[in-house]
Length: 121
Image (tube, rainbow, N blue to C red; front, side):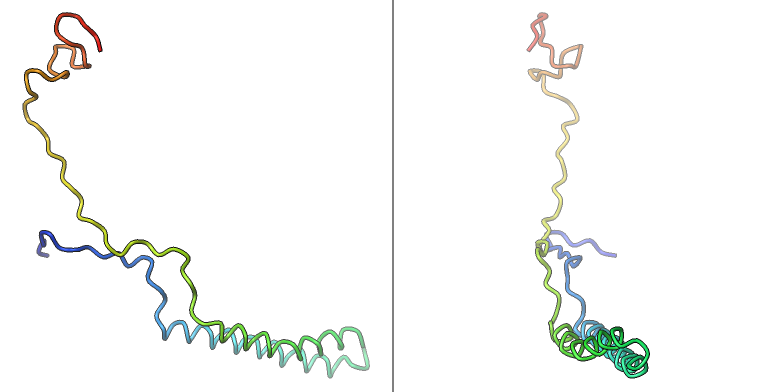
């Protein structure tokens, strides 16, 4: 693997889901919703003379579920609230001085910032 100097680095962790995956997921949700609708309509027909209130609830669910399923299926792609920046600057390498200068604060025998002559900062 070659290292490129000065090249841009791109981050893709905030990328959206692929279009084919998105369509497949919406189709799956729609099929599941329509399956629940079919079961609820059959349940309403079977329970009509046995348990009328449960049958009415199942029938209402069977009537309202197609609208909800279509709205959910056509909702479109997901929105990512805040995508990360696509450009990540290359990390800067710290410059280390091998030998500290004679006038620096760390050059004293204590190394803790004490100055020569016993003065403290």
